[in-house]
Image (cartoon, rainbow, N blue to C red; front, side, top):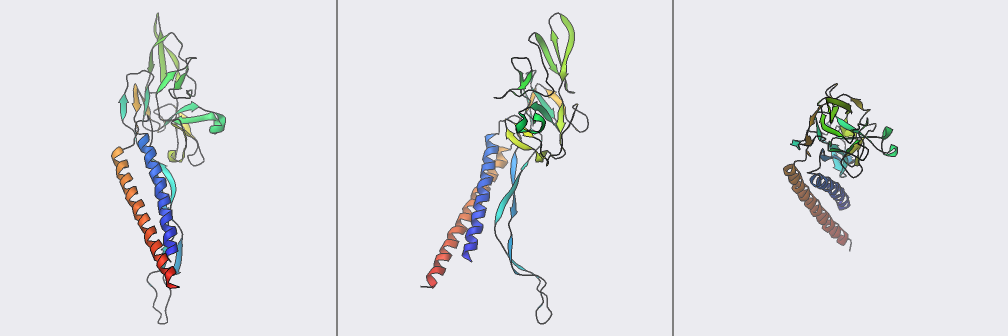
Length: 269
């Protein structure tokens, strides 16, 4: 009946509206360091079975196909694209990019993530008032383990293996400040996004596999570079147009189903 068409088209418009929100967020973060684009995954809903395939008639002939009427669509989830973003040279000694797999580990509130640890691909670091390396965002999340660089430090260097060195006036030998660790996950798409360019571990991502960069599948570090957002604006605009057209077609279905329903209602008069 036309009422099913109304409900089915409405699920399509709802799902497409969600997809539009996801595309808008991707485009809004086209300049966000380390941002990973999301996409919506769709799945069809239940079906009404009006005839089953394989049933026999009086002559023993089997029905070759069934008769099923679907009840619409829904967004089954969002999937992150962890393709490497383009390297952007910055010439800043505290900027660092992950080349390959892995995430920087930073300290967050215990209630926001397991063990009070968040994960990020953004490597725009700076020093806070205590000299600790922190993310250069509005919260200033500390690296974990904490790396402290004193006020009189000069010529700070971050190595591809994660080691951090600095020099002090009057001493030609570099002083080790600590080592940046990276965390990897079996299923990074299962991480939870919490804002601030941060992710937290979930049961879907599996436990973190942390350690020295360059080992056990973890990437290496590229100093004085930042990883650009991996959003492809051209692809997003194409998806935007497709979503808009699909939304319009579903609205046409609703109008057609409404007219059909009105015609059916008038038959009883």
